[in-house]
Image (cartoon, rainbow, N blue to C red; front, side, top):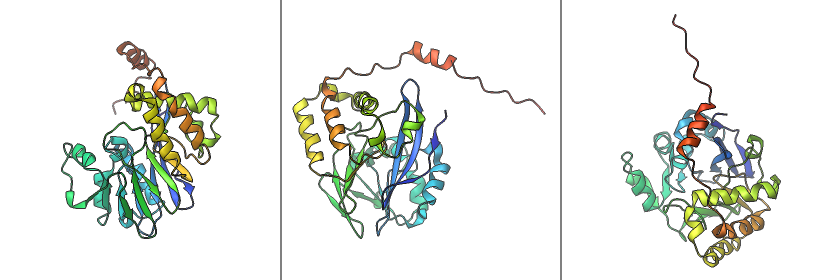
Length: 277
């Protein structure tokens, strides 16, 4: 299986998922989601991967004209979130990037970044986008210190960035439109594995402190939780919170070794040679 763009779909009446499906050897398929909020001032949350740039922009274009974007909320700078950012800034000249100072600082070594098109947001800040307010939050788990999620006070959707994500064991499960439909006995261990890989500090953290952070998120009472790496959670937040409470006691997933990599590469088909003409 190769990385591929999926068809955009509605997570709430005014919020669409633009999914990418990324195979992870030995783990399954990891969803990489961007989101379009059809606000009075349209918002894109994260920008997909550069590897599938044309496909991503085509999918985005099926939902709106990119030049109408007013805001790009960048949850953090990782390349699966920021891959098409600079291209979109060219296509959407009225768009302002909403992110943290840390994210901007971590992006700038890669290429010049237009600081006049940035509005810094920190947890607790609120941004009005015409018909709703977006409130910046810090998810309980994250891999980048730059991470900032958000709560949409109109739809009730909470965008949790990497938190609650999981690689799933089959393409069919990864392409589900509702995490609630994934059997708990399948989802929970994969969420724990992801937590120990994506947020490896979780196995060293105070369980009480993590539990408090998870409880604060639950008290926001979101109607939907939109993780960058999982289908939308509609009714399963309590279950997901209780799953992540156990992460500090989990055994970290072992890193791939060189010999395992070589074994994996040996299973790949060699590229077909093109005959001279």
